[in-house]
Length: 183
Image (tube, rainbow, N blue to C red; front, side):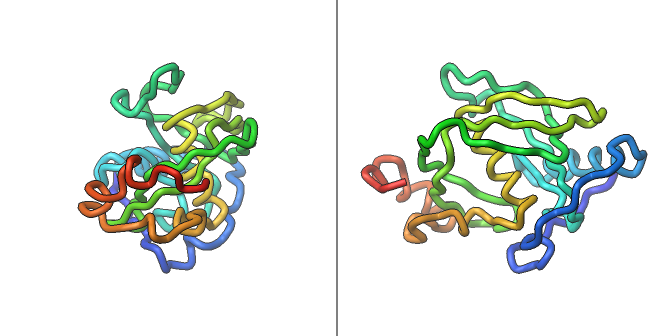
């Protein structure tokens, strides 16, 4: 397996809509998935989209750490692969969530995200998968799906004052200090 170079904000690959994956079972695609998983783990992320590693294809890998699962959340265990995903909000309710991104190192911001989303797509074997994601699971797949559409999390933010460097954001941009912010 190979560690892949992560594209940073400003690179054009992060701003275009990614192309569909045609042949999921192609050995090159399967090897690429393995490389994406290794790269995600090495970088300390919980998700990684193909455009983030300079490949404009509609594929992302992710996992929901047990420590990040919220009460009542039915999140999948282990690393998941979602190919050619389609996400649909379930209802209109949104919540502000603190996000970071491997393509925007050192920064974090509060981003409005749907509380629940329905997802559909293919797994790494090309089998259809679908479900409803809630909590952190919903947040992760919305963030990664945005990468497939050329959207970075600051583009979703409604108040750039709620963005900061990691150390400052974790100390000063807390749920208590942003209480009352409109989503």
